[in-house]
Length: 201
Image (cartoon, rainbow, N blue to C red; front, side, top):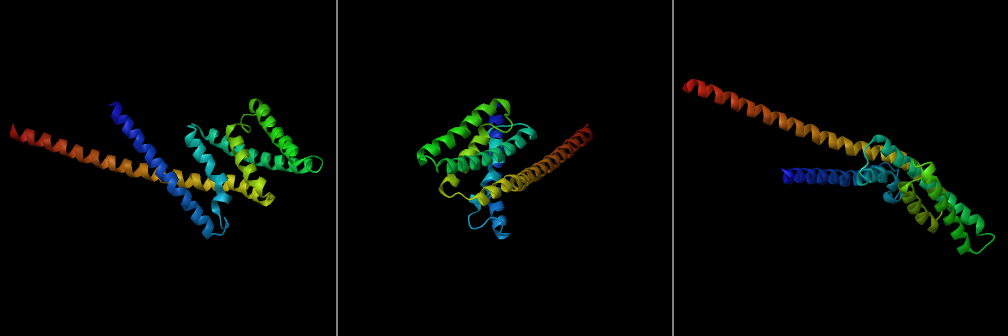
């Protein structure tokens, strides 16, 4: 019984992983065709894919948890921009290495303090967004790219989540219909068996 349950859970995870894997390039392709993602869609749209993936990987349970990931992602992107602006300002009056230390330390300090005060916005998910955003922007600071990431965190997340759960709902509906058909067939066979037994008596 336990083995059947494990196999069922594994099968569900494989189906979910397949749906997530197919939906991501599908959303990329649509964005490229519509001219919304430029030449490198992953560079533009990555913030919109993380919330659902982190929600699944982190084994979160409620829709509120999902919204918290989106909110903390936005905070992480904003924090990365603030960090780089602080580094740029400080670099005018001190060595670049010292400016980088101050900017990075300030943001990490903020995350550490506010994680206990505002965990909805300052948490591990937000810090992940901060790390990825600051790493990319550090090599080529582009404020418009950061704005695009903010929009992607909301819009792409909504599209990716809708496509994914739409596919899941469709699979569940097909599975339920198949179970109903099987149950109907089993019921017909049992009724037929009763009729045959009655006739034999």
